[in-house]
Length: 315
Ligand SMILES: Cc1cc2nc3c(=O)[nH]c(=O)nc-3n(C[C@H](O)[C@H](O)[C@H](O)COP(=O)(O)OP(=O)(O)OC[C@H]3O[C@@H](n4cnc5c(N)ncnc54)[C@H](O)[C@@H]3O)c2cc1C
Image (cartoon, rainbow, N blue to C red; front, side, top):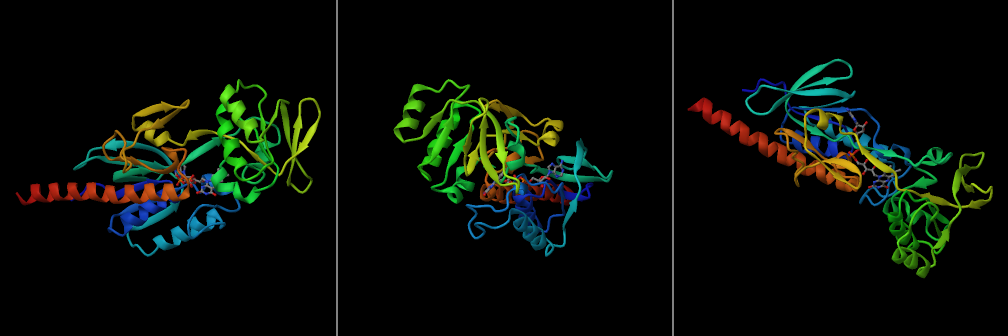
């Protein structure tokens, strides 16, 4: 009935992609998950705020997800990358994807779940601490440094809110205000809740010989010891496949995001997206939920197409 050899190619096997594969596999859809093996939180030893998995390894979660998928005959997970995708003729929407290995597959639908890349502020020593001493999400990593010395190195005045969230966890929060015009209300709010404002210019993040975070060195040569640094990296969606296929995007906070509906449909028929590639705020449970919703909705859409084709053939 179908000219394509697959129902769905899922690009990216993180929380969103594997969740979608589970739903589609349980519906006996022919699914290929192509995964580059570099989930965004690979740098973190533990993940938090994930019910049933709090304080466990993010990589263990994905390994367990892959293992669960082996129960479903028509789901295959391969370690590779999708290099490009193009539309081809079919009964409904159809695509050809080309993997980095050179393999070509045709499919009725594509789900892009490729996550995002965190663009870190260019402070010497900061990248080395990313995921351990330097983090970004108070909900993911704040509780672990409750009552400790926390520094916020902002990229914009908007990070004042991040400092306020952290103040809920510790009385020792410092906000580095050099180089920003902080709105008076934000400044008043920070000092009203005892958040220190440091006007020194950050020059370097300093680590101990054993690799643990020591503190911050400033342009004037002075230093401050801290237990954790919070930043706001610039999100860069890994959306090459979505752009190649012409999915509509919208600029938000200086970043172009591909637009999806509640189920993950893009503006291109047959092309879907879920997780961090379309939403910076998607935590692991949110990415899983988006993948789960997309998987079910894609199956529903494929079913409608199956019925149309069957009726045409019968008639
Ligand atoms: C330091 C840090 C700590 C975090 N801690 C937490 C936490 O404690 N709790 C929490 O809920 N969230 C946490 N997060 C957020 C978490 O990483 C994301 O919610 C989650 O990774 C989003 O899942 P995803 O499936 O959308 O993308 P990802 O997990 O990033 O998976 C995307 C996958 O797609 C693959 N890929 C990319 N391009 C291609 C391609 N062309 N072809 C094939 N594969 C491709 C990648 O290799 C990757 O495996 C943290 C993030 C960071 C940076």
